[in-house]
Length: 417
View 1: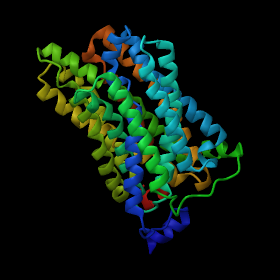
View 2 (view 1 turned 180 degrees about the vertical axis):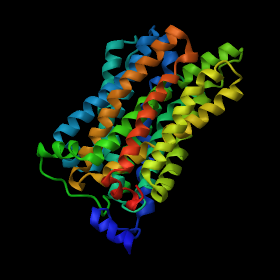
View 3 (view 1 turned 60 degrees about the horizontal axis):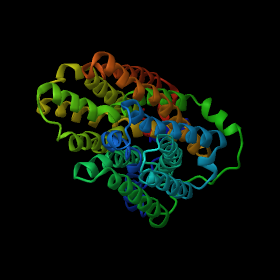
View 4 (view 1 turned 60 degrees about the vertical axis):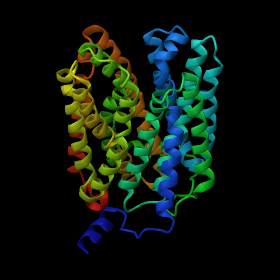
C-alpha cells in the first residue's frame, strides 16, 4: 500500500497486469529488430575484403562504419527536432525506414569498381534509415509494457546486439563480401515486414500529438531525461568503438602471440552477440533492484575490462577471448536501462522524441571514439587502443549516482530507482 501511495505521489506508473498478447509482441518486436540491425555492421564485417577488392586504405575502411554513425546522427537529430518519432506511427516509421536502409545497403554490391564516394553515401543513407528503426522499435515495445519494461527493452537491445553481430557470423561461415551485404538486406527487409504484419500497437501506446517545437524543449528541460542521457553518453563512449575494433585487436593480439587469426570472425560474433543475454539479464535485475544500480554496475565491469586489455594483449586467444566475452556481456547490458529511464521520466506524448534525441547524442559521441581507437593503435600499437574508453563508464556511473539521489528516482522501476 505504501509503495502504491509513493508511486501515485511521484507520478510513477502503477503496477499493471500482463495484457493479452504481450509475450507474442515481445518475441515479434525483438525478432524484427534483430533482423533489421544486421544492416549496421554489414560493411564493417567485410572491411578486410573491401580493402582488397576496392583498394581502400584502413582509414577509408573505418569511414564506412563512421558514415553509418554520422547518418544515424543526422537522421535522429532531424527526427527529434521535427518530432517525427512521435508524429508518425512507430510501426509505419519502422517499415519505411527498413525498406530504405535495406535498399541502400544492397546497392553496395553494384559498385564493382569500388566507387568509395558512392559507398560512403550509401552507408550514410543506411545510417539515416536506421535512425527511424531503433527508436521506433523502442517505442513500439514501450507501448506493450509498463510493468517489466526494463526486461522488455533489455530483450529488444539484446536482439539489436545479436543482429549487429550477425554479419560477422555470415562472414565466418564462409560467405564472400557480396553474400554478406545481400544477406543483411534480405534479413532486414524480412524484419520490417514482420513488424508491420505480425504485431499491432500496444495498449499503452500514446496517440500521435500535433507537431510543436515545445516537445523538444519539454524533453531537454526534464531532469530525469537529462541524467539518464548523461549516463547513456558514458555508455556510448565505449560501446561502438569496442564493437567496431574488437576484430582488429584480436587479430593483432594473435599475430603478437604467434597464433593464426582464423578464429577472429566467429569470436567477434560471439563477443558482440553475448551482449544479448547481458541486456536481458540486466533488464530483469533492473526491474527488481533498480535501474541506476544495474546500469552503474554494468559500467563498472565494462570499464574495468577496457582498462585491463593491455595486460592480456599478446596472450593466447584462450586468455584474450574470455576477457572480451565478459566485456561484450557487460558493455551493452546497461543500454536498454537508459532508454527505459527515459520512457519512465518523459511525458508519454514526448516519448519518441526523448528516445530519439538521447540516441542521436550518443551516436554523435561515438564518432570520436570510433575514429580515436585506430589513431591510438597506430601511434602506440593495439595494446593501448582501448584503456581510454574506460573514461566514459566512469563518468556514466557519476550520472547514475546523481539520478539515484534525485526525486526522479522514484519514477524508475516502480520506485526502486
